[in-house]
Amino acid sequence: MSEHIMVKKELPGLTDRVAFSNAIRLSGRQWLGVALFALVLAWLAPVLWKQVEEFTLEPDYRMPRELSNDYWFYERYVGLAAEEYDILVLGDSVIWGEFVTRSETLPHYLNTQEGKERFANLGLNGAHPLALEGLIEHYAGTIAGKRVLLHCNPTWLQHRKADLQDVDADVNHPRLVPQFVPRIPAYKEEISQRLGILVERRLAINKWTNHLQQAYYRTDVPSIPNDIPSWTLKHPYDNPLAPLSRPLPPSDDKRREDSGPWKKRGVTVQDVAWIDMDTSLQWPAFQRVVEILHRRGNRVFVLVGPFNEHMLTEESLENYLPVKETIAAWLKENQVPHLMPDALPSEQYADASHPLATGYEALARQLLEDPALRSAVAPR
Image (cartoon, rainbow, N blue to C red; front, side, top):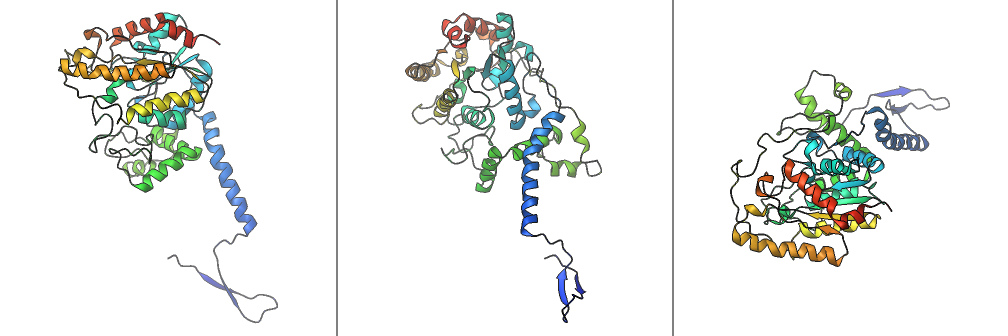
């Protein structure tokens, strides 16, 4: 308990001495003023920061890999893209372009073959459907009344780990997944952490401070969190405000060093079990993503896969067919225009779900030749 220095003061009209602390005393009105000032500052700081922080869109822009967990910045990016582009392309690393440069992605080839910049790359690495649901719900409110090309990646339905039913599975983007309902066995955060995430989603100041930590106070050490206290421990003698003068990371233009056809990379044929769609966690999450987008007045077109069926054993391929049929049946039942193309040639895949540049180019051609896409993305 802190100690207060007590002083004695002679008060006029009183014969006794009165003891009081030298700490600052505020009246109720003054405390109200302080609270209002704090609220205004918390509201203004994120808004004013956008005027200070330089960020402009450029052709083929995609989220910097270093900022994959910076959802405040993603929200800002989406807002700009929604103003400048006709069609927003949503999905995980298949849209982002894990094995290609930013000028070899699906949105790039769609723009090239269209002859103008219409498609914005809003892909986010690791954004499985449960995470994508949180991303769209809480950080992409500006996607309203737009035309959306949404990717459905069957890779998240391969097995219990991918579906997050296995308690030992790794959870990508834990701050985006549902915190309490539905229950996710693989997600094991403490209740206090979950409550903090719910608060962050609703308070702009919390989103913004997380952005500062992700964008400017990165430690680049996996074992050390990206936050200001950890940064100061690693840089005890540095000016703690100095990192704020650095520019944002540039648009990512790298491909993975091991890029190449899956067979040359040493990937072998897989015996995939595929999950029961009736008990899946990821599949209902994808359905909710479509519903959220529709609720906001968006026109949605869904691209399903194409999964690299060349990598599947004969039995796995047979088990995959009901998965495809379930996805197609739901899309048709809900009148969602979609394309479920056949698998690309084997040499155009880097792994089970990521095409190489030639695959993206061919896929863009199929999409633009599809009458349903043309109708879905045509101007109103």
